[in-house]
Image 1 (cartoon, rainbow, N blue to C red):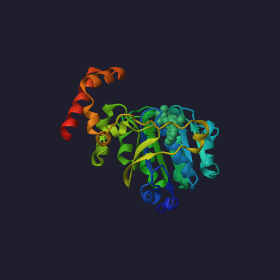
Image 2 (cartoon, rainbow, N blue to C red):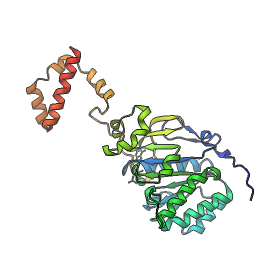
Image 3 (spheres, protein in one colour):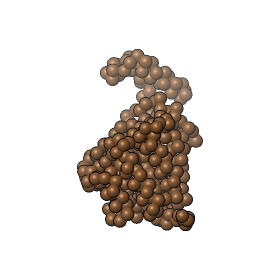
Image 4 (tube, rainbow, N blue to C red):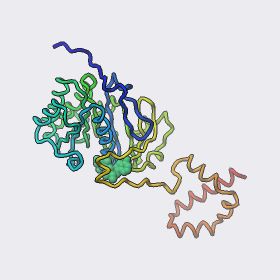
Length: 314
Ligand SMILES: Nc1ncnc2c1ncn2[C@@H]1O[C@H](COP(=O)(O)OP(=O)(O)OP(=O)(O)O)[C@@H](O)[C@H]1O
Ligand SMILES: [Mg+2]
C-alpha cells in the first residue's frame, strides 16, 4: 500500500510549557517527540508526563496513559476495560485522555498492539505515556513477554516518527533500566534529583558540556529537572498537572541550607566579612561543632576550608 509522506501539521505552532521558556514543537516536526524522565521515586516524573499529556490533548493529540500503579483513574476517569475499547477511542477520538491499566507486560501487550494499529491506520497524533518504563522496556534480549513489550516500545520509538505517535517514558535510572535504543533516540530529556552518587558516572556524559555537577543534580527538589531539548539544557520547575493539583499537595521546594556547588559556596563565603571569619577561633568552632553534632571529619574539613579562605583573603 502506498502512503503519502506524513505531515505533522499539528506540531506547527504547538507548544509545551514545562516551566521554562515554552518548547516549540515545530522543532519536532520531522522527528516526533521521544521524551524520557529519569529520577528516583517521588520526584515528579509521573506529574511531568501528565503535564505533557494535558497540554498535548488540548492541542489535538489523544493521550494514552499506561498506568501500572493504578494511580491515574482517580484523576482522568475509569480505565478502558480492554484493548477493543481503547481501539474505539483511538478511532473516534472523542476522549482526549484515556487511561489504560496495565500492571505487567502481559496486560500491556494487547493495548500496545492496539495503539500501534491505530497509529498505522489513522496517523492522527497520539501521545503515549508509559509510566514506570522499566516494567515494559528492558535492555537484555529476552524471549518472554518483557522481550515482546520491549520490542513493541522500540517499535513505537522507531516508527512513531512516521505515524504521529509521540512517546514519553519514565525510568528510575539511566543504565540497566529501559532499553538503550530509547536513550539513544530520545529528543527531550528530564533529569531529576539524584541522591545516589554512583549514578553520576552514567549521567556525566549528558552534562559534560554544561558544567553542571553532581551537586547541582543532587540539589534539585521535587518537580525540578534539568531539561535537555534541541535548544540545549536548562533547569526547570515543572508546573503541576491540573488533575494532580486537585488531589495531591504541591511538594515544598526544599532550600538547601548548605551551599552545594562551588559557585554557591564561593558566593556564600564572599558575603561573610573577614573579621567574622577571624572570630571563628578553635574554641568557638569546637563549641558550634558540638552543638551541631558534627563528626571529627566534618570539623576537620570545615577548619581547612576556613583556613583556606582566610589565607586567600590575606
Ligand atoms: N512540579 C511539581 N510541583 C510541586 N509538587 C509536585 C510536582 N510534581 C510532583 N509533586 C508532588 O510530588 C508527588 C510525587 O510526584 P510523582 O508521583 O509525579 O513522582 P514520581 O517521580 O512519579 O514518583 P514514583 O517514581 O514513585 O512514581 C506528587 O504527588 C505531588 O504531591
Ligand atoms: Mg510515578
